[in-house]
Image (cartoon, rainbow, N blue to C red; front, side):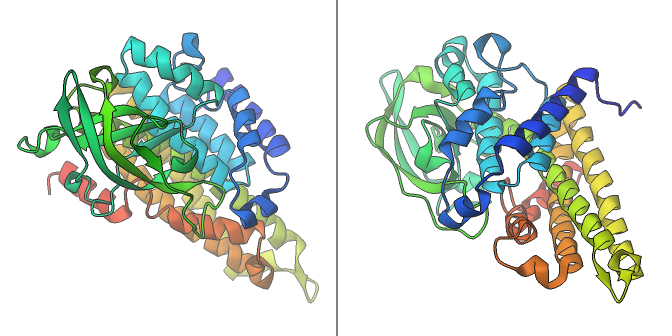
Length: 382
């Protein structure tokens, strides 16, 4: 097995790290305090090619496969200390751009992907509902046939990017009598369409610069040409989007793990107590050694899942394994870094304190880890 990156992937990784480090970190503390979405920096990310990686090159994207996208996301997670900005970009890229690039008609791609790639349109995935979070099949949003299209009504919640989105991929029940795998459909809904109301950003403690909100759909007219992946194909579209998200978003978290570990190692080697570096203490050195083990395992799991997605060889199972492992390794790694920094780590607005806050959310988004274990158990025959 060859784990070496191609020359192009190496160049992409270096370019993204340099861009993120140089352009995205100024003012991050102030943005985090204000829970401010940095639209100018979003535009810079788009100009750097990060908003449309998997989209076809002739429509403004890069035509990147899943592995190459994961490498870019890891580099962004490593270089960018604004976890909210990175998270919003990942949600846009993986749960909106990737499924349109895969399932969209030529007309849908030509209409939406140029704006999504150049940053003028922000994408959001509207699946979760107040009474249907982890149980996606319990959704209540309905799409009633109307001419060649549908009338969509319902409420969506915990929708990343909703307050700033220009496009929603909305999932709604089109056949309540069908089996679970064909009851609902994915639809491309313009955020400015009559009957669509995105609520204000929801206050939250983690990923604060990523706007999260609710969406109200009141008898929204959706033409037949806006159906993504065919009527009844919502499960296929959603599963594909979530597999990309569980791989590439968590590749970004691998980058965070590496950055935080490097910061902890530097602190352990520079901080002295009674003339002795704290890194010489076995409790500290072994803790950071464990974090290095987790980091390498996490990277391998993510890249294996991406490799499988690109070859249609069990990417769904591998993505759930990667998501569950990386999120728990991220929480452990950031908390171990906090312990290494001691009192300095828990001071408000430090990089380590923010990383710990953001890490906890990873246990929930993209499907809770309990749900990942349900998926894994089912896929291995239990």
